[in-house]
Amino acid sequence: MFGLLQPDKVKVGQRIKEIKESMNLSFTELGNRLGIKKPTISSYVQGYALAPESVINQLSSISGKPVGWFYFGDIEEYIADYLQLKGQNRVVQEHPEVVKAIKEEFYTGEFKNPAWENEVGYPCEEFIDDYFYELQQDVIKEEIKKLTANEIDHLPFTSELSNAKKDEAVLVITSGILEYMDVAGEFNYEDKETMGKLVKTEIAKFNFYADRVFDERYLIGKLINVLANNQETVQMINRLSQELTDKPFTNIFGGEELIKTIQTLRPALIKLYEEVGSDELEDWFKSE
Image (cartoon, rainbow, N blue to C red):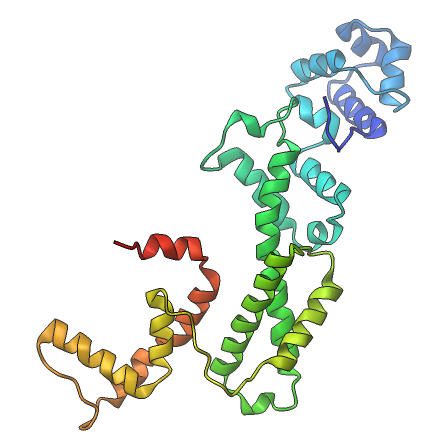
């Protein structure tokens, strides 16, 4: 009936006691309701024995509490206990929003189906594993970004870098590390030591003064590259102007403010480039 996570007899007993006391029943009275003798119900409450499924079902019926609650507590406690059993102590402690997100997906997910439930009505372990894998990548990404930004702020030449250059470096380095971790199958938030070493290694190799060339298979990468170059930006604005107004644009007699304004889009585009997966880009820019 149960998977990797097994009910704790003592905790189950405490929950039965909680129901007994909330209903103001003696051991004998509760035993009578359940059709079992006082010593038996007492052994369950004391945690000496695990109440069988038939008793838990009866307790659920008379109390209105779900069966899963008697075995594992509320759903967030169940998810947290399972993740900690799988060795994910740090992410549970430092990112409680992960547990909440798994609960929310279980109840309201777009593709919710009965197969997500185990026999006690809680998320099955396979569902938790699958959704946690996605969430952990987001958590690791944010952690690597923080580690990278902190390391860059302590570089001896950091004062020479503009905020835009530093932000771009953080995004590029983070993206490279995540790509490596994805290929190597090493997504593990618990291993912060390895993440820290990867960050330091990539920062040591990174050229903070070079203009990075982005993948131009999709428009977003092309735009980032164009906006890094004034002349190419002028040419792009000219093409837009010709298309939209039938008038050419030139910066010979001014127009620098328009160029600078359009180039301010570049940091936001870089951020978007690093956040959006290739699958999404495939959907954005369908081939004919």
